[in-house]
Image 1 (spheres, one colour):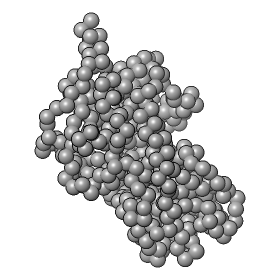
Image 2 (image 1 turned 60 degrees about the vertical axis):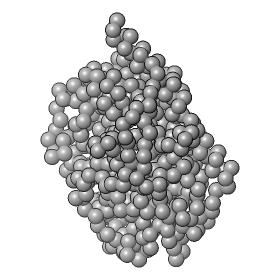
Image 3 (image 1 turned 120 degrees about the vertical axis):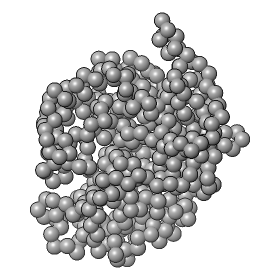
Image 4 (image 1 turned 90 degrees about the vertical axis):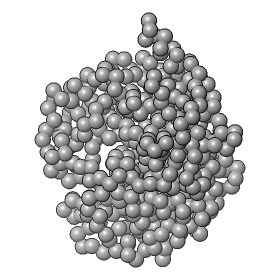
Length: 442
């Protein structure tokens, strides 16, 4: 009976402002083994301007009404988990992780096979018999990973094979910023994990990284007046205690007295609203950020050179996280992976077009800094044209070679649509220009 009463209090009880001092400051992410990955260079990185601002004058600004409408849709999708009455994950997407670990061997990073007795424990802990039994509303209280199964353990396909092994941890489904609304389906059997649906991804999040929200909390937090971080790798402190890394893409409501708000978690797992002081006004801006040459150049530069972080691992980004977080500041909502993002805008097919004609069509039909180019498995931001060549910014793992291995770039680069074209061992059929299928316009 006590547990039931406590739960009712958690869900319906009033939130409160607390008086701890929260500060948002410039910082750096922690270095890790992702920083030790190969970072090969190709001629594009020497001969094509590497400052995104160089291309910024090519933009076509949005009208205010157009950007306002995009931003309205962004907010609706961002906060949708709080309006759900049932879990809405498509059946074809649900349970993929079980099929993945049971159909073929999975491995640890150093190459040992993970026994069935181990992954069956993870599956049992997932408690799938209780899917959608809770229907709670919650919010992230720090940047957190989203796992495919309720475990912190990484698992890989055979690391001996090209394109497998570190950093491609298939348990790393995504990463969520602080202040992300959640719908909780159910908890793991050990209660350490919650199965959540966020605006752009779903999976398992540590319960210690979220807090349950009340209707009063939602009313205050969802106030239609928001800011977004525009400087990457900030850090949030509570007094002098490090609370979370905060990356571009993190959203903060703005209160009536022009203070930034964030969610914290009390000892009983309830969400509280905190007020945040920012070290410099220039690190955060009201959303949507005006789509100007100055702003697109400034923001894009924050992503340049970041190591490739599969699924947001190691506090970094993969290709779709880069595009999502860049366009989000301008009020454009994108979902988690490249295939979904290719459906999020207005599509123009470029499949099957000869290379030279495809380049001309990209330059003609794509919009600098507001169009994506898509090939299955990869998505890039179109920056504009340089000496008759389309130029892109993308978080790129590597360039396919004739022997089917890759020349690893492993970071966010600026290149043509033929990076590595000067090298004799690059596989022609696998060049981006020959595989790109879609322009996605916003």
